[in-house]
Length: 415
Image (tube, rainbow, N blue to C red):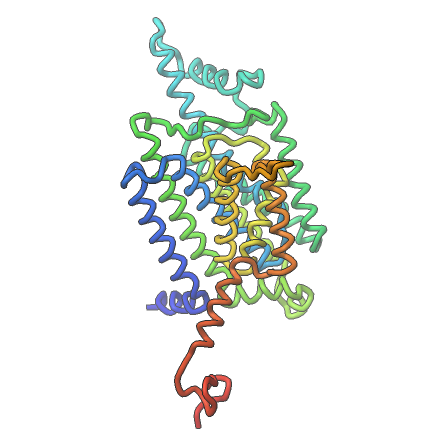
């Protein structure tokens, strides 16, 4: 069948795919055995949520690695797409949850409320905090889960498509393109901070962890369900990006990263490749955000600030850009370490004259780690895999050439 050779080529071009999926499956089995809802309860519900959110961050780090490590575009705006996906699903969650609360409260009235009265009450409940009692136009589809799920994909994808088309068509590259992506993120964040933006300004959307119609389901069960969904999305994202970075397409996008002018001279439409990768990674980032924020419970414009995208770039750099598993390693390592340091898990260090409180020093430690990685370990944590592979190659024994320990592939084929 024609599909079998394609799968074979994909696995041959990306040996890490099978390893990654196997490790992810074992990790999910371990969490299942230790979770409150499905196992011994050794892992608390809050920890399951932290792990689920970490998987979402690994997915957006994958997207960042493809656009930066493979394509060569240092985007400082992908966390904006991540946040837009969260807002899109958050609108439905908040509307549906408020609708249930309002309907229950008005059901006790002597005269049954009309649909218009229910809608006005929902609007007042949601937007009263910003002094409004009307639904903005962007909430037109908030009552439909299907349409809002479509918005999770459409809004980040459309924004990336328009922005990328304008930028790539003008052949903006390098640091100038990075500045433009950062400016886009800052403008979007500042707009959402306004109360008349239609998304409750600085208050953001809250209560997203309360799934409508599932009041009887405890948070332990909800958290493990979101964990599974996040793991499935990460596995699908890894397969997707492994395919994108393989074969001819992968060769072209890496060539664009290394020498864009030469690729254009060879007859490839560089802008189309860049626009495809930029838009696709934005869509994946939006999906990751839609899975992340129901686990976080709240989203506000600060989540879209440029500093969030800078953190994302730091994660990918520490993990090792230009290799998919490096992005996952970096995001998982740094985000879990951040939760430990900033959540009070790391004990303070009393030096007598000064006490080091890691909640205050974590960002400094992260910045120093980024600088040291850039200077002395440009392959990041993922480079450790290369070291292990090199040591395994040196341990080969047998008749590989005329000299002991020689490799026959270096000596040439046997005569």
